[in-house]
Length: 159
Image (spheres, rainbow, N blue to C red):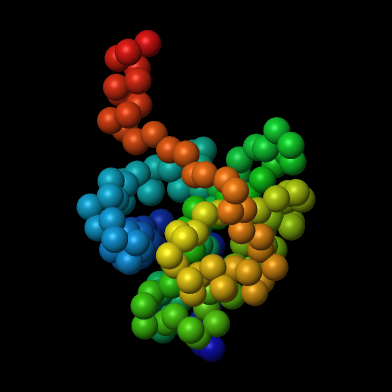
């Protein structure tokens, strides 16, 4: 494996957004990505970054990302949330996902977190098997709950 894992830099934003779109396509949500390069620059590399991103390069091309952020659990305290771990299609099965997950786990460990969490689609069997092989636990009795922008606006209008 000739991959380099490093922290993302501003110059990587186009590639990061490309991998985010590739993930949306894979997850059958090709029109769901609303984030822009400007959003990524502002919120990942501005004065108060909201996320940290690790990238994997091969031949100086970004081919995978792991994007994380800190959140707070009322039960566990500081927590790392893995928003997305995306490996470009042609590099899957190369061990690159493990390298990126290792980086995320080391990052959380170095921060002293008590939990690292993420979601995986119930039909993504390769990802489920991958995460379980790493010792992760799938909480099958929990539901993921979200409100999209339209739901938020509708709610606000009715309170």
